[in-house]
Image (cartoon, rainbow, N blue to C red; front, side, top):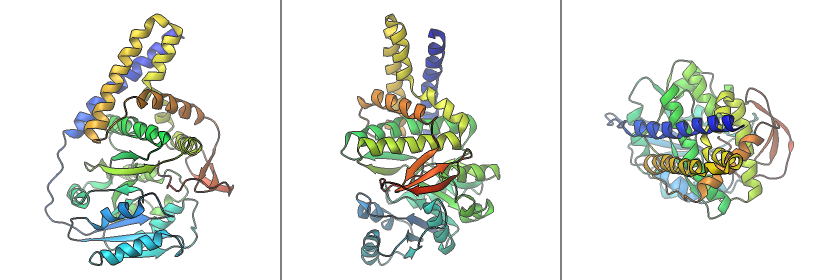
Length: 382
């Protein structure tokens, strides 16, 4: 038992050090200068009134870019988000924008159905798909357009800084997203390259999406963002981690909703990337050090070393890459919460998403089972 725990902890500490190296390698890449701005279509699937929805959408209307359009998709014209969009359309009448009413989704993944209809209506080849709970600066489109000047780039993932609500569980989740989730992406980028896409904002060429089968090929996947990048990489297109960091406002939630979200994420990740899911154990050094100290109490210096390495890695990834403020006291608690979610992810094959219960298949696809109790209103993009 001691040998196994020590080996696991050693691997976890090596992983933390690798995340520091991966972060500095990412920061060493300078974004290119934009030469000729091309047209960009922003696709925004909406459903209900997310927290601070108007403030989030406003940042997309205020892009300092000469040639872009905004497309919004709602399931029903009676959705309260429609009033927010119409109010902003009147305020920013100079910005080309359209509101699409899609009706009931034809796919298991309602977000993918909305994206497919907006993609068909999009004017430009370069599209930016962004969730309703994201917020950006006025230079986002300029940065993405400059990166897509490279003809080899087909899809780009925007790193995101999680902005929590006022609740404890929201702050705990934000600590994990900013310190752990981004570290995993950076390490994967350094070791094997970007062979996937993740996150609430992804840019892509319309021609690339069409060449991999379009959204109709992604319609049955819960983690449609991940497989979008995987299919593109397999087809020979470049997938990159953008230099532009967006804000992802995760809002507040209670324990029940937070646990359901973590479980959905864990079960989806295990099916999207099975080997990578096993490796997630190495992203949780603090619980491993605690277990080792429980077996041998005299080994408590190992716990101090682990906390020091863990804090340094989190500081570089969250502080330097994402420019996020971390609640340091929450990091050990988040490691314990992630370990519980990771273990739970090995069991069960159902998830609740937007008030409906779905069954996950071994390959990451999912299918509707029956109506369930209303869930929180986020799009499940992870």
